[in-house]
Length: 254
Length: 382
Image 1: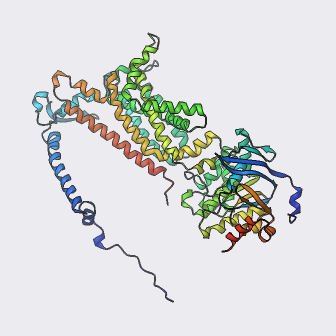
Image 2: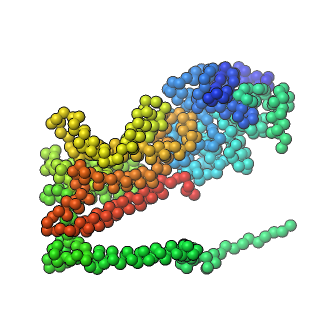
Image 3: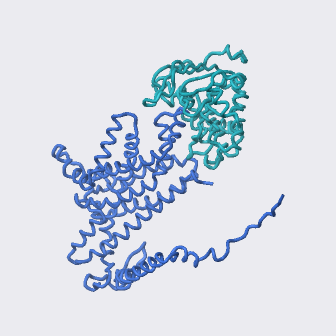
């Protein structure tokens, strides 16, 4: 963990401690402790059902948790709706199934939050939205509806939508899992660009190439707990636990 | 290795298109289908000719002289009477004479221009709304129309305010009353229904319980009961002399009744919205109301259009029940006018006429709903 010393000087933007979550009787997250520094890129991986999605969905309070604390930019997550909305305007999320609003055009999908949550004028919001669409390479699709676009394009729109409110933190919940193979790279390219710009990112993903290239830390989860965390080099080459070794063997054979 | 030439496109073979093929695939595809086709044709054969005979060929059209938009059109020397109309065909002059009653009820004849303007405005509304579709401020125009139209209509029909002769609701009747009850019922109950549907899905237990109880209670009770309650039971709870309008009571009853049905229709739509839409709306920081108004309801209502219109059509037909609390809508007028000693035994014409008018209105509604569905469809456009 000494590969990137510069990060150590920065403050923690997310502090998770002793986080426990149950779905009914099922113990989904067990004593999670995790600090994320400003500008850090974290990749979370692990077998399905290991709690990785649940973990990042707790960070913007899409999931409630029963024990422990999460601090985002120093604000503690509680039931207070006002606080939650403030945190959500700083923490953006990209979903596995894009979740674009099918009744709105692409550009309207982007301007919704700036206009209604951040009180920007329509004109400002639209201008910014078009710039972002340009950045993800689909400005010419601005007036179309989401279902007229391919999966890869839709996911790029979703990323642009979450960037519209200039968030400090981006959460990615398996952003490429629902995509056809030939569309994965266009989405990953956008994510790599983002990573270079210094935005804090937590990505749940199985794209190990992406993890190796941009992650500062990779976290391996299994059975609701963090089993191992390491920098990419050691993560892939010197796995300490058997469970991680087994997981790596399974996903890297092909 | 093989390389293939590009194929040219051509039309399908002639045996695969055209009328003969259509007949073959749709009406005579199997022996049982052929049998059904023939049976249907036979049914039409025994039903249609007598109907046409009664309605047209043996019917009397001796309206006398009719003034239509300022032109005198002479159908016959004098208007037919009940006697010389004959019994083997319809006596349309009877409908013509009672047309005023069917349309306006007991509305004062000197004031007919007022409901006429309202009818005109209503028709205009259906023309204007699609016209401003591409206008920049179309939302503002639509919203002001939604607010202005009922106000203007009310002032015109009810009168008062020192401007127009007041016409009390007892005098409203016929098609005018039918349209008033149906449109007020639909327009007022719709927002209530949406709120109830959201209430039933709410996380706040008290609101959820109240909405559920209200919906389930109303849905388990026939409309007639609610009309009776509103008309006869409600006044018992009010202080004597504290009179409030019979029509208003009926309207409140109908609006609450319809709200419960709309609530269930909208709830169906809400349930069809994927959870991801809620999560995405939450994740970008929208509040509860923003989420519902901007994201969830537009999609849920769009899915619900066919059912909303279906439920509205049911309500339109149910308005005929107001007869039992002494309001005279179009159908009640048929009964009333058939008591005219001069025109005894002509109810059939009245019922057929009302059927045709109802069908025309409701069929238009259902076509309009289809158009709305297509207009709002952004999911499957390519």
